[in-house]
Length: 447
Image (cartoon, rainbow, N blue to C red; front, side, top):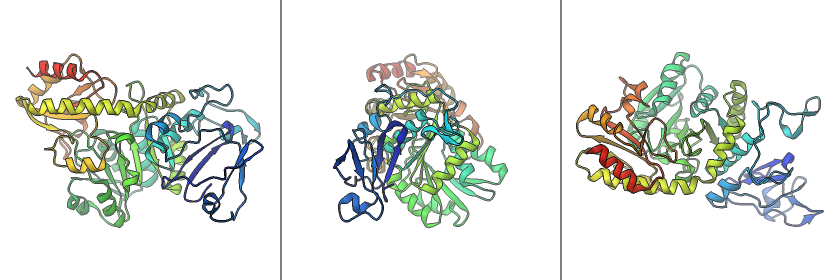
């Protein structure tokens, strides 16, 4: 372990994977020793400033070494995914096994003993996600809600208080209001775009965390992560950011002050609508250790095959997100000019109230567009059922475009609450088809 840096060594694959926080690479001692390379044990030795206070470790290294100084796509393709040492497979194998041989009683080969506890395919995905979010630790789960539930069971106890968005994903609010509330956990919705509202909702000493979605689901509001982090931390609260809509390609919450990043990897990370998964990424070593205990104890882990599919998706995340963003900007501009549209929610539009914040906080504006139609609920339902290229269905983030009515689909669970969405609202997950075909399809449905 290099102080102030994360260096993870997997002996069973004879390789080294390094991610540094802050993202700069300590210079490692370059002289080879019998085909090996010496790695410094301290920042001083690593930078060549002075001698090590501890012994240097001599480990075999297979290049290229993946570091946080490299570009996003380089990390997405290589982090945690070095060629298999046994036969040289370029693509990491799927370790479809429940258990592993032990060389002696209590001595697990390579550190793996049972796949609920850990699995090499899952390790590869966890390392890749951590590298993409700029975090020290990644944990993956069977779904986004499994990840959220594990986080809540780890940090909350009876009497804990949370601040959540007043237009949060319905499943997240349901988890707070109908599962954890009966165990004494309270969650108060707040308008996270208003810092005064956030400050008023925080109770120092009681508020365990401020839970942020940005952009929010489905109204695409933008929260100022850095400003909210300052407010929360000054009151002793954590900041959790659901980065599902933005993805690590468009937004880096840990860099902005968040403590934990949450993902539904089902969405853009997987990108092909063929898996269900979730993830947590963070820097805090102690919290990560507690989360790993709960991950194993609760058991809501992702299967090796699902982990492999998400890894495959991450390899193309950057190029897919560029196309999602291109198409969403064109679709939003079309809808913004259409006479049957009452309002368009898209942070890439100049008229969006948080356009400037989104421009500062995100690389681009994402692939989600929501809009309200003139004519009320019935008109919205007709549009949802009137497309042919764009598929009527829940979820988002796949290569195909999806359309849905949040009030009767993804957000039905918040009907009658403060989080209830307008009944004329439509949410569109803009895929990577040809933009002119998507616009023509919407034009027919709106006719």
